Length: 186
Image (cartoon, rainbow, N blue to C red):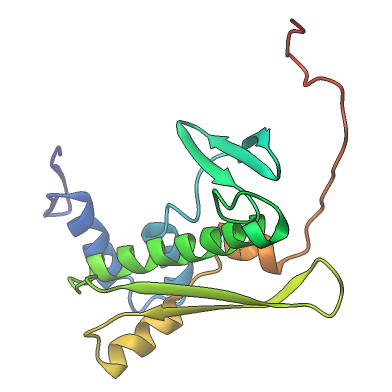
């Protein structure tokens, strides 16, 4: 990585740069806002849209594609499906846990703390209303941290992209079309 010099400081790598900035602004009132942007680019991506396409396979199974990645989405065998993938609700919880987990790994790395054994467990309760889940709970297990380190980590948790999508008001539009714009009929 190229070295940039300014005000007598040499920034040798992105990690040491972020750590230096982190320490420099520790007393600054807007620390959490700045830290969120520095520490969690995965949950605060710079893009306009998130796009996933699901192709029907068979039974209740679909294959979801985003960029170069593919994931099977299915229902359990006891529901008459093939159980070749997570359910949509499980994928929602996985997205939430992944966003939180990636933030925690970045947080630990910047502080020189180990991430070995890190575990993120996410659950939600069934709602009394049909076809709904509620009361999302994320538990982050970080072996080896002291109580003060755990409290500091807890205070730093941001509201990331996935957390905001779940907890804030949104709009949802579902529409049926015969063909996607730009598709060519064969």
